[in-house]
Image (cartoon, rainbow, N blue to C red; front, side, top):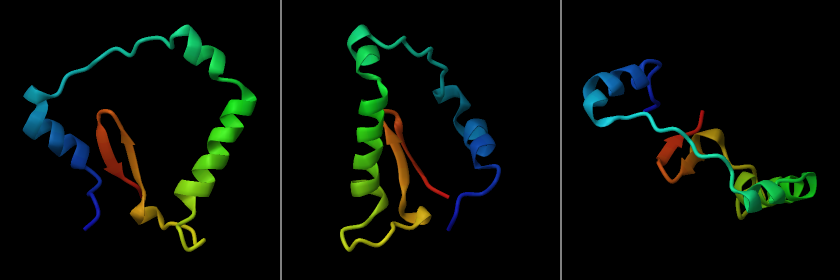
Length: 77
């Protein structure tokens, strides 16, 4: 079942006392220096090759994609 339009507001209503705001830290020098057009292009080529296309060479459907980082994951469209 897909997530509803107001799921975020309902989540915050239920769990607002457990959620906090954090300020992000600036990029360290090494990361900033690595962020150049060639590196970015290489990254997106890897993403396309390994995350956009399935092992069978067919595109992965949006409903089967998730956004994920160190804070958790969320389903795609």
